[in-house]
Structure formats: C-alpha cells, structure tokens
Length: 262
Ligand SMILES: Nc1ncnc2c1ncn2[C@@H]1O[C@H](COP(=O)(O)OP(=O)(O)OP(=O)(O)O)[C@@H](O)[C@H]1O
Image (tube, rainbow, N blue to C red):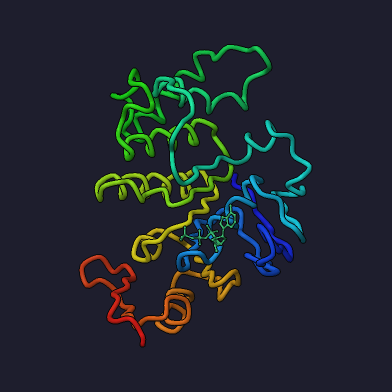
C-alpha cells in the first residue's frame, strides 16, 4: 500500500531569493504524479524536500501519518526510495552490490543479506534489464545503464513511495518506455506511490494519473492529467503556443509545441 504525502505551506530558499513559495498540496497514496514546469521552477528542490535531503524553511511535510522529521533514516528508507538526477556513484562497487544496498533498510545491524534479499535483487535487476551487468563496476557502464541500476536499487528497497528526478533523461526511447511501464505496473499492481519530475510533457501525459505544474516556485495548478495539461496552463508556464490533442493511434494526450511567444 502506498503512502500519501502532504506538503503544508512550505517555503524554501537557498539564500535570499525564495525558491518555493508557500506550497500546499496533497499527493494521494495510490497516485502516479508528475511534477512539470520550466527550468529553474523549483521541481528538483521540491523533490529534495520531499526526500528529506533539504529541510523546508517554513512549513512541514507529512508522509503517511507522521511528519517527515520524525522518521529515522532507516525508517524513512523503508517507506521511500529516491532516484536523484545524476547517477555518479562515489565508490566503484559492482552493479550487483549497488542494487544489494537497496536491501539494507530491511536488515538488522551487521545482518548479512539472505536468500530472500538475493532473490529480490535478481528480480528487480531482471525487471530493469540490468542483470547482465551484475559483475561490472558501476562507474564503468554507460549513463543510461547506470540510471537503470539506480532505479533497480530503489525497487530493491520495496518502498511505498518512489521519488524520481528526471528518471528517463539518460535513457533511449526503448528504455524510457520500459522504465515508465514498470513504474506504472508498480503503481497499478502494488499501489506504490510514484512521484516523478518529468520534462517530457508527452511522457507525463501518457503515464501520470495526476500532474503538478510549477512556475517560478508557485504551483500554477495540480489535478488530473487532462485538467492540468491544457493550452492555457502550458502557455502560462512555458510562454509558448502549443497544441494539446489526442494521438489518433494511441488515444494518449499529446503536446505539440508551435512557436515561442514574442
Ligand atoms: N544548491 C543551490 N544553491 C542555490 N540556488 C540553487 C541551488 N539549487 C538550485 N538553485 C536555484 O533554485 C531554483 C530552482 O532550481 P531547481 O533545480 O529546483 O529547478 P528545476 O525546476 O528542477 O530546474 P531544471 O528543470 O532546470 O532541472 C533555480 O533558480 C536554481 O538556480
């Protein structure tokens, strides 16, 4: 069962400039929500706050029933997995060891991974198409392969919520669809809450149940994909003319940019 996330009147600034301005919204426990918005609108900052990598300057965030601040690091990792942008890993472990680290929140101190952990690791590596890389050093594979390994590690955590920042940016079209299909399956079949920052509006429209549109640190709107991905909302955020219609073959909502407004 997924977990809900409540963002309550959250403000954030790195220095003088306020980056996120009194944001308030609720992410439902079984949703697949995409956070969209132009460069610099605050998407990654918001995701880092939900991941507890950054602390709100004002306001608070509730995961399930408890304030995010109340969780121990291990307790939080049992609930939530995070796939950040940029996948450089400090130590050159093998791919399999990296994915195995995803099991640590479920082990006692000094407990070694058991056969159940090994089986989960194998399963998620097969699902993310990384099993064939298992003996390779993590920093000696391609960026797209590493992205899939980091996603595999997140899945190995068996979290209730997965946060992803641009999970498909390094992936070719085949692997983009493969990973997003997998996230959708986890959402539909295992009720995992998925929160993803996505730049590609067509992928956001195709996979999300809900969308949150950020612009200069404010939420322009949040709601179902159809409610949010409209010509007017997109014009406000991206300052350009777009066509929003449905693909005649797939029926998915699609966005076609026309021209930049002058
Ligand atoms: N570590 C930092 N220190 C100071 N300012 C920062 C820092 N990280 C981001 N910012 C600023 O905060 C604002 C929001 O950045 P953020 O990365 O959250 O935006 P974003 O919507 O994810 O952008 P992008 O689409 O380009 O990834 C930007 O103006 C950025 O310059």
